[in-house]
Image 1: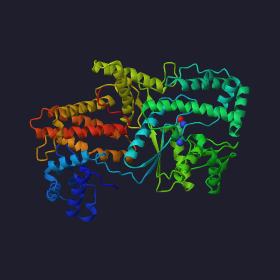
Image 2: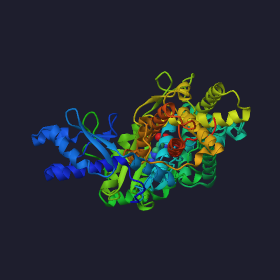
Image 3: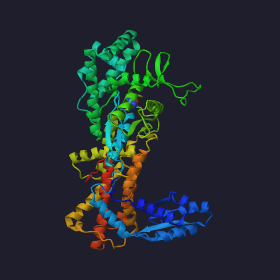
Length: 592
Ligand code: ARG
């Protein structure tokens, strides 16, 4: 693993561990040194308290022994025993400042590539063709994209997979309807194709019209079912119509991705139909390996620990009695492909929590088949649902599903108002450009600052506020630092070197230590697959900066040396914020 710039938390932990190994019996020396940041010191450890009982010793005495060892460490200036036996550890400020300088020298801000040995196959977004991309797909899209960015930054090889729903019986219905209604509005394209929503809306309307006929007319239903068979059999005209529908949808999804600024491209599409050529092979292999059982003519997998309310075993349906394959067979093919072709070591499926049972069964089946081995992680990275501003299920006034494109339009409108209110000097084009960045940043930050398993309310007014934990606040903090740095540049004050001997104010120290946490936070996200930890960290960093800025004048500092030190803090804060926001997929503007 590339050792870039070490983090203080790691160093302090290592130092306490060494002190423990020098003073404690061997079996206790390897315990967690329980180090954390503290308001009373740079770091605090309460390991003496936790171990004293087991050693039947006085915790303050034990702490004092550890303190004596720690004071010998080069970059430790002092250690106090406080209260019942806490160790308060203070770092040397020249060491602190040196490290800031090394971070600033490194384009990666000193962050090591801890994931370099991993191949992360990330399945995210996955909307369904011929249906509107709705608010439900937003979470998977944004969380998946943030993880793709973060794991990639940490050195992992990232394979993005957009498993769009582009196959299934609904296509028989759509294609049959189109062939019987050549005048269907979809072909006339009466909608405005220049709007993001245009193209998919038309498909959505087509879907609803076809569905209505399918439900009302048994003869149409039978014809639609024959179409499915024709599609599966590769009938040319039918396949052609299917292709047209799929291509149209994918273009529309792409427009939304571009608007959102997510990384997904058409090359990342590996939809359900992509796996068709392997479905029979997958079933044959599972049968050969005795993983499948026959049940009422179908081929299924059973699990001892997965049972229904009456204790009956719940099957994973791999092949239906009529020979058809469904969602489960396709996902068995995705996991096999991700392991064998992409050589994935971490397979992440960013899908709604309601599919938890499906993935549990798919993973267990893949294990029994021998595809999924102990050295590979397969994880269903679950997300909760998005509710309306009232906290209830998100519906339009008419009771329909809420279209993502409409929500983004709404956020854009509100952002424009809020930005104009804050600064009325913007021209209309500039205002549009800023509102664009702010609205997308607001939506993304609201999503990514929420724990993914929780449900949350989509509340545009709260999202675009300059106050509180919002994307706008972070973007605004970034522009304020950028403006100070510009002024320093203009006046020539920005050239100073660091002055490690100068005493640091408490707010400067706190900011320096907060900057030092960036790498650790990213590693935590890689381990937990929870981007909200990064979103929360950036907010804490912005607050630490604001506190610093309010108590420590930068351009008007007392001396050139102090100014140089503070400008260094400003520079590193700006770059850490910009890098962190980029990893969340949020723009960090220079002006706002
Ligand atoms: N298209 C599915 C849906 O909208 C999500 C697919 C998720 N990915 C997967 N490999 N199953 O619910």
